Image (tube, rainbow, N blue to C red):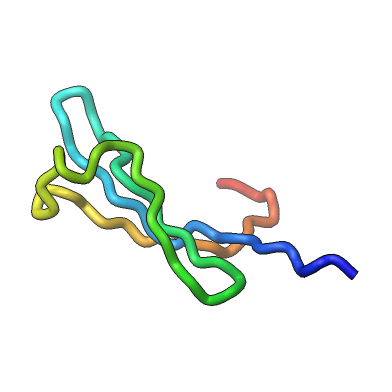
Length: 67
């Protein structure tokens, strides 16, 4: 029997306000193994942590009804 698949849900993201608008810096995921990790979209050395706006992501699934 093959090992169970690993799945991840996004739980938070870090954004940076720029003159062009909001820029996604990283997204944090929680795996079904309990571990978390960040996927960086920019070089972490190029970003000041104090300027990043952290936004929690709502993981509840919508039923398709949007108002």
